[in-house]
Image 1: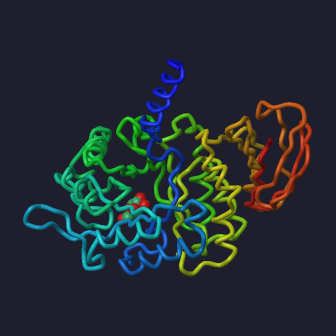
Image 2: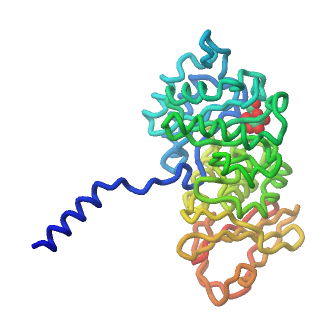
Image 3: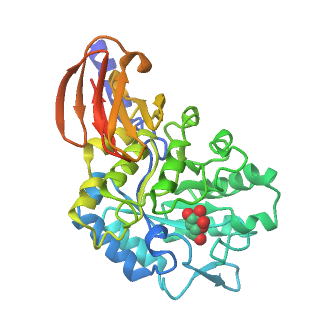
Length: 379
Ligand code: GLA
């Protein structure tokens, strides 16, 4: 009797305990950002249409949740110093409500400097006030872009300045993902998490061509030890579907970013995308590599000229293996299990062909197109 009463009391207590809190950005943030396609041509109407498209295309259900407004939404300040949105965004709170009504989250953008990169109003000397305004609007994500902060702070102040905004966001009580954007200066990966960053850009801006994608993507090797649940390296947003690369190259883009456990922020016009673009962005097997709960960033395990093999440890002892061909001709890319620390036979599945490839012995190869990839999941 006493035993069962005690058990009941223990159960009641257990039920009353709050669930262990998931850190913000427990897996790399997924969503969409206005900059790559729209730059300054973004407004309330377009954001609402993108929100609609995120739902109707299935992007939201594939995991793309954050709808992030980048630079050019800002006006000046009112007499009390509150930041105002400009005429393109007549009512941020109403827009946030609309976005939330679609089961999405809203992101916004600012700078620690007096001006943003596109010369709009920044948060300099208004950090706490701006954080409170964002929270009152219902903002869920802030990208904080260094730019003109160079005019008022030395680089050595960066950790402190980013921490100031992280603390201001925390003080609002609203969970707001904090994205550091300072292009990788001073090895941000070594201090970004301590400054409260959930992600930090590791490079300059991406553009919609193979050279840019290749340079940025493959140079992430070596940064893997700095990424993990709640704090990610950010090699910049996706260009998939923006028209400057081939479908093969865009598949490599999504694959490499997933191997890197990078944030997946689509940057194309979701209102008008081809079935092929949508198919690339919503390949759930590939997204599952990016979003794997272990939260490990992949790394290069072998290189032979233009051919590279990358590996990413997954939960449950599984692996993702990327066979990349950076060269101008199709060619064979060979995998040796020993390079990954494996031996014997392992079952593999091709995540772009959606086909099981059976058991592979300790050495095997695939034909990979120029600028292409074969992505395998190894059991
Ligand atoms: C910088 C950032 C970009 C974008 C623009 C906006 O260049 O790196 O991602 O936010 O500013 O002005």
